[in-house]
Length: 253
Image (cartoon, rainbow, N blue to C red):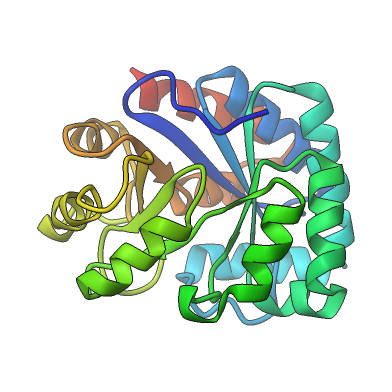
């Protein structure tokens, strides 16, 4: 198991676990992998997802309302890992559910479930000592978010403490689809490359094949979240896996 991007740009696909239900999330993840996704970001639903726009907020609300918990997400991660051993698998969460479980217990269970790494949205690198120890002890890759507004000293710390890849935010603000990428995206990637040789994935607003192609001009991978979650929201559950599979294949085209 390892996070790798064999094609450029690589594709990181975000899913809110439990939306519309856990079994469908598993099937969607497998369909995405089979159609070209290099990494699945499996999102732990949270009641107050501050970094996310309306689309992912609604998905999180639906999953929370159905009772989806961190332990459920770990179970689905294990099923995805068993079904597709070579795919990259990242657990994406806010800090609160992890703290409630306990950092050490979470890291051990994430490794047991077959995750390659973890992205905690609101974990800042300056306060990540315990987190980094738990990640290292369980051979998990900590993935940090790097924003266009971050000074170089902070980007350097993020780059030095990340494993697997660095997630570059394309713009300031919340997640969500947009019509075009901002110049901030290429600028933040250029700045990060001064401090790391890790792959750099660009997310927040990457919505279609044109965006993915544009990202490939300056970064190693594109992260697609809201566009996928919105497609799932508009699709009948029994058709969601096939619909996402076609969408991901289209991003490669």
